[in-house]
Structures are given as structure tokens and as C-alpha cells.
Image (tube, rainbow, N blue to C red):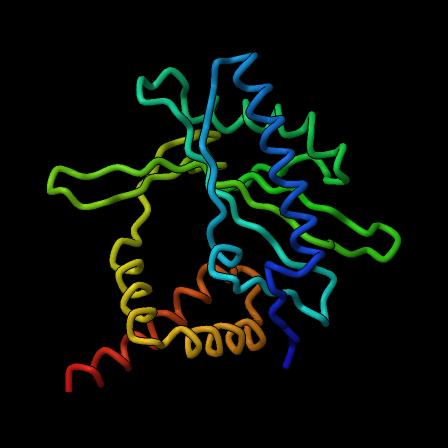
Length: 221
């Protein structure tokens, strides 16, 4: 296979140390934003860290990553989506390099910081920050929107996530003791993936959908 993805526990000393530094960075970023802009936020680890499904590829030069949701406290809409993301980047760039990270990269969905082993041309690990807002629609369904960077038109926009049913699938699989099957399919998909534009988020969603599709029919039969 092209890859050799392996799991690494979030309780390993390496990951715990990196996560502790990340919490310190966020604390200092919060202080800067509060003092300079009266901009405050909540944050929460999501994705592979929250599921304890962190992976790294033993064959590549790219290490594991963290996914952090940033929830701006901006009910009065005092800040534009662009200000929310770029003010955060400005503060992050003041603090993260002190912990060995490069300056933040601004992509379509997230801000990313990386720690690199330049001598061996390796990314040791990276952190993706997504800016999100949870809300209920007019019918009472829980929804989420995120700040999307439209590079073509250089615009920052709040855009709806379309994953409500996806979260219901995850909860159903956990309830029916099928989580190990999801883990096995997910790691297999990562190892077989040869599309550089298909990221872990998409591969995990595929694994969830496949196991749910087969197992839900079996449970109904």
C-alpha cells in the first residue's frame, strides 16, 4: 500500500505535551484578542483527537494533527467573518512561533499551524482551527455554520455545515457497539487513499456511512 497509517493515542506523552502547549497558546491568544478587540471565544478539540483516532503515516513526512473548533462569542455581530478569522490569525502569529510553529496558513475552511523538522524535511504535527457557530433552525434542528474563505473572490462568509444526519449515524454506531469496525475501515481507507485532495475528514465520513449503511439494514432485518 502507498501509506502506512498507524494510530497514536491521545494519552501518549508526545501528544499530551503537544496538546498542553496548544492549550497554552490558545490561552494567550484569548488574552490578546480580549485586550485589543474585546473579542472572546470558546474552543473545543474535535475530529480525531476527540475520538482518540489520531493517526500518522510512517511512510510519509507528515505527522499527526489536531482539529480545534473556535466558537466566537459574537451574538451581536460586532465582527465580520473576515475580522473573526484574521484577528485570530494576527494573535496566533504572535504566540505560536514561540512554541516552534510556523505562521498560520489561511485556507478555505481553517487556519493551520505546523511544527516542522526542517533538517529532515518533516512535518511533526499540525493544528487546524475552524471558526464555527452552533444554532437551531426555525424547526428546532441543531445546525452549525463555519467561516468559509472564498479565495476566488477574496471573501469570508458564514456557510452552513451539512452534516446533521452524519452525526446521527455516528451516535447510532457507538450505541450499537460498531465503533471498532469504523476505526478499522477508516485506517484501511487512509492507507489505500491515493488522492491528495481527499482528506481524513472525507475518509472518516465514508467509513461511517459504509458501516451504517450495511449495519442499519442488518439491525432492521
